[in-house]
Length: 320
Ligand code: GDP
Image (cartoon, rainbow, N blue to C red; front, side, top):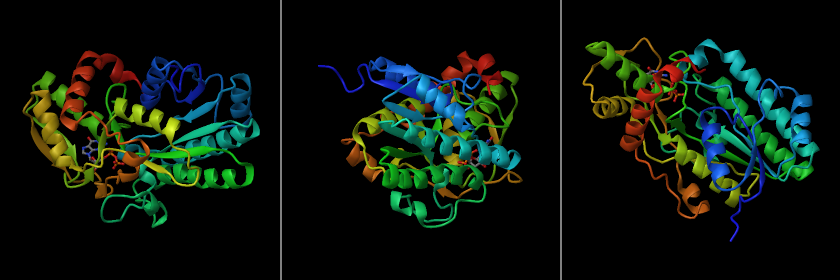
């Protein structure tokens, strides 16, 4: 029996990026014909390039996984670039999608779009319940605008789309550049380098008290592909995560454990904590994806990530 993805024409923006490369590999293994637009050919921040891309490479389903993004550091140093590039890319790509009558637009959103000051796990209906956390507003709001655009485009043009809200990703192929990286990649690099240099201590940012949720990137790619197949509500976003909160201190202790290097942690409280709690409620995800839950637990995922980073350090350190 032919599966859903066999011979489907699929375009993945950001297909050479961290999440995108895992999406592409998985889609290909399921039999899809995958096209990845590269920035030098199509600068997706312009409407002309978005239209040209979709006309020259017609597809059934478009995954918009391209983003200019990073951890709490880049939100401080490059707020304008984060804002402009993500806002116009999302807006123009969806406009192009409706002009070519695309069948389905899969928007990759972010947990940074949620209000940054709520108690408890974040449910889809909370998305509109308050302001984003100040530390990530420039990125979070641009992705949130895609959810607004999706509702408007469904109502006026009948464009089918889904908006997936991803929690923090980690794993092979991430950005390991300390100016840009998220906490997992940053800590993996710090621990591996401390071991190599035999440094007795490792610096960790903030107080260690913020709670985050971490999903292994390959699990996340699987969830996105499953959602693209099974989820069809253009009006209501869908959370993708584990639903499990971990403090930054617990995360650092686990990296310490799986790396085998017992570094002493030094907490630099001059660095920002960001939101104190960012964990998704995944009740709807489980229901909509027929009971699917991410199979890789944090310890196993971190062990794979440390092993990958050790084996690919030279390349990983120079990539984005
Ligand atoms: P966020 O989820 O948007 O806040 O982004 P990050 O993944 O960059 O940061 C998550 C938390 O990890 C914040 O509380 C940071 O202060 C903390 N953290 C601890 N050490 C580091 C580090 O070396 N790099 C980064 N990016 N965050 C760190």
